[in-house]
Structure formats: structure tokens, C-alpha cells
Image (cartoon, rainbow, N blue to C red; front, side, top):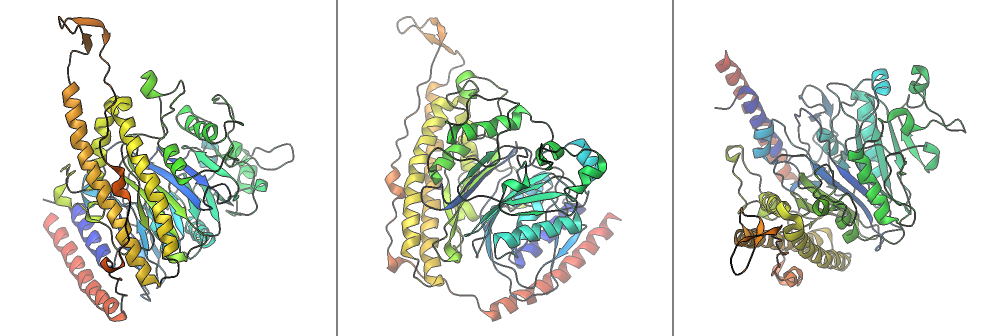
Length: 575
């Protein structure tokens, strides 16, 4: 039997589905403390796109899916939760925008007691946001301006911001206003971008934050730590009212030789290897001419210049990084104390790619890895799509909690595949990663060609073509994942033996050396990821009508009343 809280969760979710999930509500006990992020400016990407990337990490089985949240037009009076306990609500604009996101399934929320997390959200105007990369402020800052228990969280921010922002700058202002009004309950970092610009936001305390516009000719790569030093290094910034005065008044301000506040020294906790080493490997990989061996004492700047142009596929490789070729590689050294970017604890991983030369309603692609990316594949989800393939778009129900259904849901397929692959990453994981990277190289070129081809189509026709392509790639990736699960289990079973030592081929007596499993061979054909556009097979999506929207809101009112009655019944039963 469901508890009172579970009944409330069920009714809240029913309500959210009926209003087309414009904004999710979230209940959480703690932040996800293990993310890695990347930014690539359009002037240093190989195709002129802006790219923001995040690995959304936590060690558990919290399945996620891909969702299209429809626009809501001219419906005043709606609100959405700001905090994790559903006690503080922000008013929404009468009109909110269509967006795609990657929330948790209902089966995950039944298990973890949370609601959901948009994670990677991109709206119809190409405005994109990923939050959060959790970071850590020092005690002096937090004592001067404590976090707010019922303030904004990483699980509410993405949906609240993206559903009402037409530009990246507006999104930053919406986020800032939410913190000004309600305070923040966590120390977080957000990346926000559109076709024109990208912003980086550090949230330090209950009310203090700093947002800077990122240079177009630079890149970023960082783990769970703040990196922003001086506001004067950036063309534009948006900051909280007391960002500069609070440290001075409370005696913890740190200044440089020119008298400028050093935000990093003032607000941040000291560097720790867990986060700082990931920041280092991104700098070293993209700019080896400037960065050498790792040092816990070195400040790795937020923005830096890469030695070469950076492609989307480079980014996907970077977010899978496991310190290959260094003394810190857990796979080569068998070290167990290394926190890598390419981790098997990822709930999902995403790279958002935004083009400035396309219509806004088809300008952004979210490359989604549902589950860990190291033995998973990134599939494209354009902001133009009207639907998602079932394998990525189905939401596992509350009642199916605990069912590891890799025959139905992409998340379980790639989570299971990764769990097997990391038992011997060099033998199992690396060959699978290499195969999927070859598939991603095909898809990244083909979807760019497809987007250019649809550039002059009307929105409805373009959406149909792009949806057809994305759906085909999602279905192919899922089929490959299931086949690889079968192939890997077969290969592991062939090599399974608790007697780990090698054997004499004649006598079968154990030798003095461990048996080495050779890397598995992936026999799949990546040519299946080539897409042949057939106009006759694509039916343009029908535009929404006002009467349909009106019907939806009638149903909404009925369900609201039903929800109220159900809550009264639940309370009376408990009494």
C-alpha cells in the first residue's frame, strides 16, 4: 500500500502529465555530488557550434528517459515548486515554451523518494541549460550567508528557467531572480547557452552568485569545483547585490594585487583531488602545450585556449575520460582511489550542441546517453522533435520499481552493459566504447547534413523529418545495446573461471601468471547508422489547435478536483 507521501507523489505526477509536464516538481534529500562539465566556444569548435556537456552522476540505479514537454499558451495562475519539499512555489508566466529534457522515471522516484530532474533542458528557441555541477563553498562564506532550507535546488531550476526564457541572457536573469527571491539551498554551477552566447553561473551561498558570459574562442572543463577568479576577465557579468560587499563586511574577502576581489579564494573550499584532477585532465587533454603534470596546488583557469579545434566527438571522448595513458588510470594501474570523468556511476550524460546558422526551433541537439556513456552511445534529440522512440521515451511506472528491464528501456540496457564492461574495462569496455564512438561520428555528420537540408522547410515539415531521423537512431542504438549485452555475456561466460591463473596447455596445471582476457571483438555493423531520407515515409506533424488546448485545461480542472478529494481521503484513512 502506498504511504500518504506516495499518494501525494502519484497525484502530483498525474497532474504534471496532464499539463504536459511544463514544469516538474522535485523532492530530494541531497545534491548529486559527482558531475563533470565541458564548454566549447563556437570559434574553437570544428563546425562553429557551441557545445555544453555534463555527466550527471550518482551511484545508484535511477533510470531516466527523454521527454518532450509541450508549450502551454495563455494559462495564467500556474505555479511550480521552488524547493525540494513542495512548500515554496513560484508563479509561472501564462505562456511557457516547449522543451526537451531527460528526467528520472516514475520507478526511480518511487525508489529514491524524489520527484524528477530535467537534467538537460533545451527549448523551442534553442535556449539550453544543464544544472548542476555541484561545488563547495567555504565555511566563512556559508556562515555569513547560509543556504536556505527551502530554497532553489538543482532539481527544480532547469525546468523553471527553460520553460520561460527566450534567450540565454534571459535564462540567467530568471535564475538570478529565483535566487534573489527564494534563496538557494545548494552550492551549484550551471551552464546556459543559446545561438548567440553562453553563460557560466556559480552559486556560492544562500543568496550570492556570479554569472559570466563565456568567450567564444575559449573552452572549459571542470569537475565538482568552482573556477571563477576575477569578473574583470570577462566581457559581461550578472552578479548578486552583495557578492562583493558580503566578504568585506564579514572579514573573509581575498584580493589580488590590484585590489580586485578574488572570487575563488574568497568563496571556494580548498581544492581536493576528487574534483581537481578531473579539471586538470581536461586542460591537459585539450591544451597539452600549456598544461603538464597534475598539481593539487595549481589553479586551472575556468576558460583556456585549446591547442586545436574541438569537435563534438572530441567532447564525447573527453566526458568518457578515464585518465588513459597516465599514472592515475584505474584500468591500467588497478587503482581504486581515482574519480574519473568517464564513470560507471553516471545516471545520464548529455552534450548539447547549438548552431547559430539554423532556425531557432531546430538549432539545438541534445546528444543523450541514457545511463553511463563509457559503454553507452550518445543519440541525437533535436529541439525540433515532436516525439521520442519508445525505448528512450517510455516512463517506467511506479509499480515496476526494481524491474531491471533492459528489453524495454534504453537506460537499463546501457546501465547493465556498463556494469558488465567495467569488470575488465580494457577487455570489455574499451572495444564497446570504440564501436559506439564510430557510430557517433556517423550520426554527428548526418544530422548536421539533415539540419541544413531542412533549413528552408516550414517548421512542421522540418520537425517531421528530424523526428524521423532521431527516432531511427534511438531505435538502432537500443538494438545495438541489446545485442552487445548478449555478446558480452557470451564472451564473459566463455572466459569465466574462478581459477584466475593461466594453465599449462598440456597438463592444465596452474602457472605463475594470471590469465589475461583478450579484448572482445565487436561484430556489429555501424553502417546501420547511415540514414536514407525518404520524403514519402515522413508525415508532417499536425499543429496544435486552441480547441485542443482548451480541452486539456478542462481535463486539468477535473483532475485537480479529483486530486483534492483523494488527498482528503488519504488523510482520513491515516486518522
